[in-house]
Each structure stands twice: as structure tokens, then as C-alpha cells.
Amino acid sequence: MSTILLWIISGFLALVPVLIWLYIILRDKKHDKLMLAIVFSGGILATIAVFAIQWVWDFVPEIDPFRWVENNIDDPTYYYVSIFVLVGVLEEIVKQGMVRYVDTKTVLIQTINDSIRFSLVAALGFAFAENIVYFKTVMLSAPIQEVIVTFLFRSIFTACAHMIFSGIFGYFFGIAKFSIDVSRHRHWQGKIYFGVHAIGRIFKLPFAHAFKEYKILQGLIIAIVLHAIFNYMLQLNLIIPTIFLVVIGFLYLLYLLKRKAGNLILVTDIDEKRKSTMNKRDKDVVLELMGMWFDQKKYVDVLHICERLLERDPDNNVVKLFHAKAQDKIDKENPYNKALGAVLGRNRTDKDVNTITYYRQKLEADKKNLPEKQKKRLFKIVDSKNKKENDTYKL
Amino acid sequence: MATPVTLTIEDVQGAADITLKIIKIAGQLDESNVDEEAKKVYTLIEQNPSKLNIILDLEELEYMNSKSIGYLTDWYGKVFENGGKVVIAKAKPNILDILEVVGLTQLIKNYPTVEEAKAAISQ
Image (cartoon, rainbow over all chains, first blue to last red; front, side, top):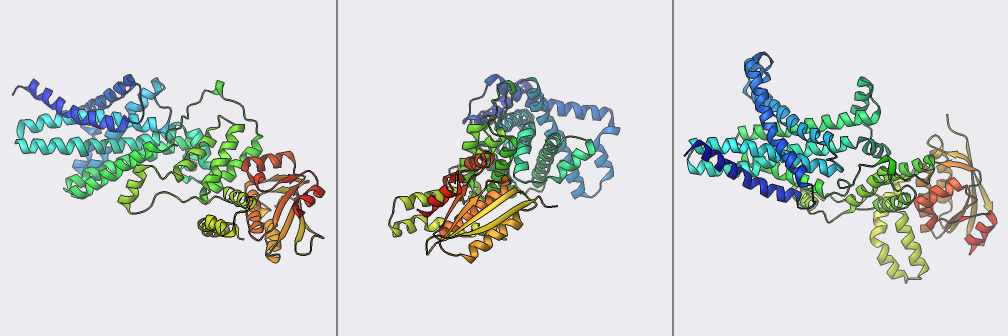
């Protein structure tokens, strides 16, 4: 078989899973096809960039970290872990770098989920290019059974693994991109980030900027660790745990993509932003209360407060984030959340413990003069739920 | 140092089986003083386990933080469950604004005078 024909067949084989994966990850939302093509090409270019870096290292071996590991680490466990961490560092930075580059040139990412989706597309571009090379090599040297196994494994698991690493990095990159709104939201939830404060102090950065850098670093580290674990398990031929990691990771990505908070458009035009009709000090009190009640799982109360507050301050992204997150918390319909719960063996949907809504309904029941039996039945479940919650304020 | 705030509880003669109290809060309720002041109200609720009616006179309350709104909601719940009522009188516009956005005014009505609050709570 001629080399050109081999490349063409490999390209065709690598394209089939790409089309299927693209359908799975993009079916819920329409995207600009040109942007998708650009990001996909960026993923392909990322493989070329990785080869280029390795080519440079061949010429200047003194700066080649892989060679350093080969020459200095004898223990096989440490050796493989180091090599796989280096592979993770190199590939994850290059893949995400492509998305980041396109985002700086265009308005690519408007929501956190855009960041996840485009990172998945870049990962598919990367896996596509890698698969062409693998398929061609295996077709030249191995029997047909091995070609089929390689095709199936790389099309399903390797492509999926690349998407998981990039998708999770993309999620953190999305949070980082909207760090001003997200960090404010987390502040009102009373979350303390020692890492962010440390970065802020060391590099003399304001909180939102330090939060941004922290989230990018966090995403990178998680992606690298997962990448290294995946490669290391494959090295040890631990197929079942590898498949388990991929299934959990992909379900988690699909769950993230279904969340309302992820689909919230956080890019705002300052010129078009409507002014708040509520005094800042009073608004801060309400935001702090929402953070407190969110932690106490009073999601329905938080939802109602958000709706009233958005009438007064319609373009407040922090309030919109509270609203979307409260909706996500009580959303029992997210199929991927259910699936994740089933795989992990625990219920991932929080029960709501509202207070104001509960007493308002009770008052209405009183006004309607419902028979005592009916009232008791109506509030039996909520009563036992609220009993626990009332202890929160006990001094 | 705690921000100055005063919380006084006044007995009011009401119907035979109902206890009516006026709680007057003046100053600013914030993190430095809210827990201490809230204890007084919890003690009052514990001492009057059934049919306790409360009028919160907020004429001189300048500021209340999120925690104090949480306490207010909790007091309402405890009093309501025991067959009592809670109303507010003379709250300043900023306080009322917060309570409206939070949704508490759906449960606890505000009245422009203590007399009107008394009349409403006695119904």
C-alpha cells in the first residue's frame, strides 16, 4: 500500500470518531462553525507544536526535561510518573494555549460552558492528529486485529481522555475568564481561598486577578494529574480503572455542560449595563444573606430573592450566578448528575430547606381555613426537614 | 469593640391568653453585637412558649446585617409555630427596602405607627 493511501485511510479512520464526538458535545447548543473549525485546527496545530518543541530539544538536549529524567531517575515508578507528568504539562498547556489564543483574538468565550466546549473541540483536534499518526504506524506493522483494537481504544478512550483533561482545564479557564463576577459570588458565599491570597500577596495582584491566576493554575494541575494518572494506568495495563476514570470524567463534563450556571452569559457591555436602583450597602446585606442561605440549602428562598433583586439591578452577574446555581442545586432533571450519582453511589441533588416560602405557604393555608388534617399532611414532610434547620440559629 | 445598639423589651397589656411585647431596637445591628442582642429575644420566646405576639419597633434602627435578618426570620418561625404573631412598626425606608427584597415583608407586615401595629396584631 502506498504511503499516501495509508495517510488517507488513517485520516478517514481518525475522522469518524471526531464527527461522533462533535455531535455528542455540540448537539445542545449552536456554535459558529467557522470558530469551531478554527479551534479544531488549533488542536491539530498543537500536536505540531509539541513535535516542534521536541525537535528543538533534540538539537539542544541540555534543555530537554525528558532527557534529564532519563539520565537522573532510576526508580521505574518515579521515572514513569515524571515522564507522564511532563507529557501532561506539555500537551495540556499547548492545547489550552490554542483556545486562549483564539479567545484573545475574537469574542470566542461568552459563558463558562463555551470555554469547556471549545476546549473539547481543541482536544478533539489534538486527538485527531495523534490518531492519524498512530493508525498509520499500526497499519504498517501490526495484524488487522491489532489495528481494530487500536482504532477502537484510541477513538473511544484516548479521544475521550483528551477531552476530559482539556474540558476540565477549560472549565477552570472559563471561571478565570469571568473571575471578577465569580470571585465576588464566591466572596458572598463566604469562601476563603488561602491560595488566592498568597498569590495576591506574592505578585501584588488585586483579589479578582489573583483569583484568575489561581483558577488557571488549579485547572492546569488537575488536567496534568489526570493525564499522568491515565497514562500511568495504561502503562500498568490497568484497563478497568482506566475505563472507570474516563466514564466518570466524561459524565462529569456532560453534567457541567448541562448546568445553568455554566450557560449564563457573563460577557457584558459596560455601556449597555443598566443602573441598580438599590443602595450598594443594602444590596451587600442581601447578597451576604443569600450566601448564608445558599450554604444552608435555602435554595428556593435564594431564587425568589434573586428574582426581586434582579428587578432592581437587572445586569448584576453575581445575582444571576446565585440564581443559576440555586436552580442547579434543586434541579433533579440533570440526567448526568443522576448518572454520576448512580456510578458514585450517592445522591448528588440537594434537598431544599426554604423558610420564607414555607411560612408563606403555611400562612396561605391558614387563611384558606384548610382542615387541620389536610394542613398537617401538606406540611408533614417540610416540618421534619425544617426542624433540623431551625437549630442553625440556636445560640 | 461592639457597635452601640440597644434592644429593650416592653410589656403591653393585651388579651387575657395572649402575651404582647414591644421590642425596640435602636442603633446598628452588626456582626459585633447581633449574637448578644439576639439572645435576649430567644430568651423571651423560650419564656413565653405559646401565643406570644411581638411588635418590633424599628424607628431608631439604622442598619441590620444579614445575620440579623436570619435571626428575624427564625424568631418569626418560632413565634408563628406557637400560635403567635410578629409585626414591625416604623421601619426606616432602607431597612424596609432590604426586608422587601428578601421577601420577609410577605410574612412580617410593617405599620407606620406602633398603635396601628397593635391594632393589627390584636385582630
